[in-house]
Length: 174
Image (cartoon, rainbow, N blue to C red; front, side, top):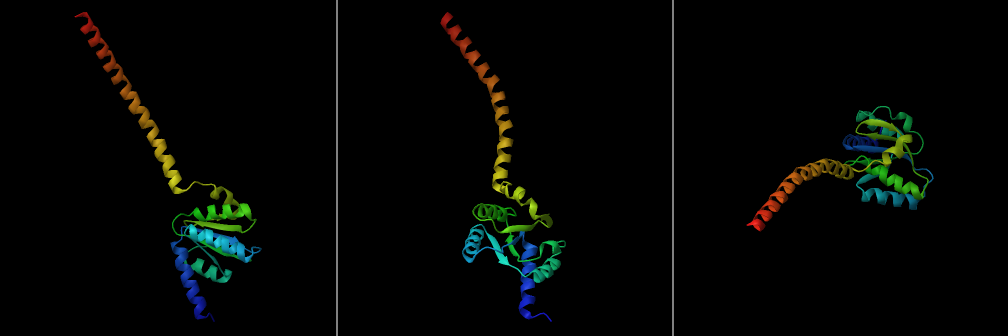
């Protein structure tokens, strides 16, 4: 018989999973309290929620949120990083943290409902942020426009220079 505390936990977790754009399942076993505190601080600074989850309760919450296929990743100690804005921000935090520490190990990733194995973590962590991608896109769009402007401007300036030279020559002859 489930107790009220677990029922409330599953309901809250189901709601969070439904809102999350990025869900990272990690194995935190082996990290000491100080390291986990540092990791939580980094996640908090990047608007990512990080919590330890009981596998059975997480399975129920995932089922309630229509996330199937996570059972293979929910074994052993599991902590969950949830991002509600940028699905890649937890990957950046984890990548930076694992440069100094070997843990936590990413078991699985859910981005916009798509389940990705933890072995793909390195590829995801190296993706540019949304702002960086938009800046590159604008630069790519702007480059051909600038070339077009210079190409259109060049004959006009040449024509203007030529007419000014003719005018100067005519004024010298007179």
